[in-house]
Image 1 (tube, one colour):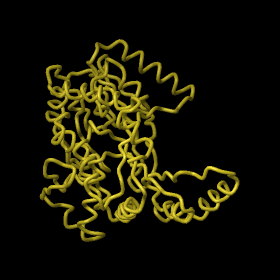
Image 2: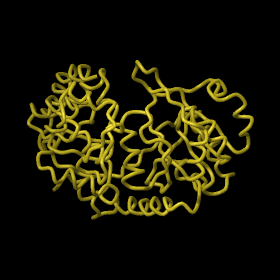
Image 3: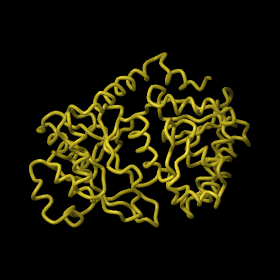
Image 4: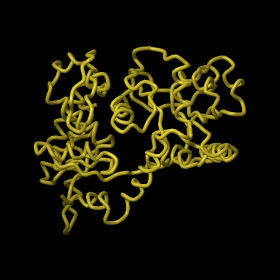
Length: 361
């Protein structure tokens, strides 16, 4: 991917220069660059315009990536791949196991992308993070304390919404919301999980809405697609045995589902719903560690699970986790509802994200 992006620098530079040449006044204040497009920082430097990187993961993960970069710049990192070691990392209160580091650090195919990304982060004028001070205060302070790093601006939370307005999606949206309307409040588990959770979900006995989509091939980059028949990837008879209390779908309007009062689980602080962590790839293991061990606001299924290991978790383990998650007496519920209120307050005028959103420090 790095070469693909790098090859576009000339085109981007020429286009930007042409746009700038047509302006009579008010030069652009900054180039804002996606976290996977850091080669474009060279274009900003050439045009003498400061560059800022948008980092869509959390502040703790960013601090982890910066720290890992200091431990080695290439094959030297591989000694940590299967390590059982844990180490103190700025931004975390607890020692962080090597087993939860982002997978691209150890991927031979993608490690160069990680290194290029981190080098770009160190060169930019500042980093805009989709997080907020009340959520990751310790991690954000850890970034601020390191004066060798660019300034970090917590400008979140930035809620995402679906932009699919096709007639098919509108029909599916209505069908999903109508189904949720028929369920008791705080009674539905919402899943965007792999098929391996089916047995545990069935064992738990809880209502569920399951967005089950076909992942892209491991050797290709791409987006999930739809299964023609969910029955071909689910345990035999699963849909018949869970009929009436569960619904298996493809695409889902995630924000609308999370906002619905019948839903009570998933990864959304914005809507104040508790979470069960079963990470698969990318930085999900580090996120799971943070939620379970640092914040104590999520139920663990397995925080260091990696899809490529092929390990199958026992149905009893996932079923127990779901039951714990759905317990209305679970203290996790109090924490996530408090964070929901804080996340909404953050977006008010004169609150921290409003201040940092102006790129002042």
